[in-house]
Length: 510
Ligand SMILES: Cc1cc2nc3c(=O)[nH]c(=O)nc-3n(C[C@H](O)[C@H](O)[C@H](O)COP(=O)(O)OP(=O)(O)OC[C@H]3O[C@@H](n4cnc5c(N)ncnc54)[C@H](O)[C@@H]3O)c2cc1C
Image 1 (tube, rainbow, N blue to C red):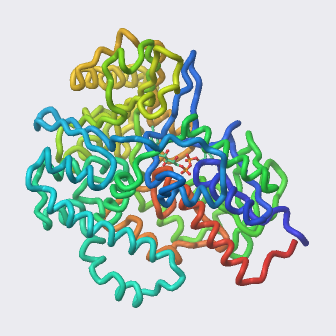
Image 2 (cartoon, rainbow, N blue to C red; image 1 turned 180 degrees about the vertical axis):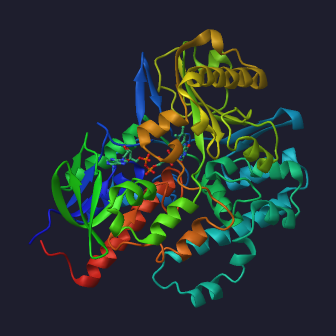
Image 3 (cartoon, helix red, strand yellow; image 1 turned 90 degrees about the vertical axis):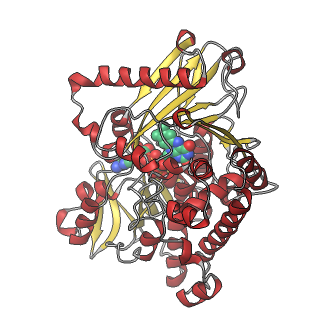
């Protein structure tokens, strides 16, 4: 009997939407099911008063332009969603560590970045050039991993130096190169985007992201990430796929060790492949009958640590960024350059660590708010389970107090006057993200990146971790980890595996 769909996707976050668009574009009968009334998950926006706030996207990595496309632009060009990009960012970031006298404004462009690093840390340029060379090799090695010609033997022959860097921490490799401490602090600024400190983070993975930002510049969609989500949704529909909203999938059907459908309400929908944008914790823990969950799947979800989570303060200001004296898009304010200390200070606690990322969206998208106004977002990170201890009685005071401290830190460190000009304020905590996304502890970041468990290890054990056939996981909880770019790529990965499986068996019975 014909199945209802070829592919059913649970959740319309970045990973789910990209999978849906890629599958529908490849003519598979696709259904994407989302529990909210709009697509995107974290990739959304919301309106308060006269402000349309970006909910999550600070910057999209590896985008580039249609003329000089990075990996993500190429991915989008393949499915052609209608998105207007803001890609002409000149700055990568500003890093301010007041106690260490660091205030560095870094440009996009590899050459420009090296030049500026030399300006702040004389003597660092030749070392940085070697690091970039090593990084380029890692980037090529990663791309080759996707090549059908890639076998362990061919890989080792082509990239004999890969494991000099992969499997070693950022600090180990940068120390080996002899990069001076101040230059190290600057180069490590993006550590938080991957959710692991520089003693834990794999150099090869980190440098690939940094080069993605530097070579192609950071990007942003002009009408917030909601525009990207809506454009992907349109691709699905235009290609004959379906997207259902206000619909939560609570059960995945399994037969003979193979996912074969979902329950929506009390009706079963059969399909060939189930792709989940919901975390394995939810799928194995709640959505599949216990008898069908392989023992190791349960062990895996209990052994992995959840990724970091945030408190974000969204501010609608009744003055323009120029009037407020704001000059930069992304400023990282940190109490220390010791990323391990910083991560520890933010672990298993609900206390604010003093680390805050300050963004002003009007810099890349000047008309994102009405004239004479601007929108800011301030973000701080937490690792572990601290917010689980927050009781209802504590919640509102804690959230307001944290927001106040974050704003005051930005005012003090950046010399700004913000509080008198706040017209709208929205504060999202790990609890807000948990409620909206349904992720463990409210993480939008998947599982924690550790020296023994990140992209490389997860790729190597991918087959062993496929406990049920025809069930794929996409999004931040997949092997690629968090972030817009990784989540879109995870949808592409799952889609490619499905197409390969289809090709091998000569097409679906329709
Ligand atoms: C404040 C903040 C700032 C960030 N900044 C950046 C940044 O600058 N750059 C960057 O790259 N990344 C950033 N991120 C991270 C990025 O947003 C996430 O990693 C990414 O969006 C996660 O996408 P996902 O595919 O995992 O889906 P999610 O966003 O987790 O969405 C999953 C969707 O599935 C739905 N769903 C779940 N279960 C079910 C079910 N059973 N039935 C139906 N629907 C279901 C949910 O409702 C949700 O819509 C940020 C995140 C936050 C919160």
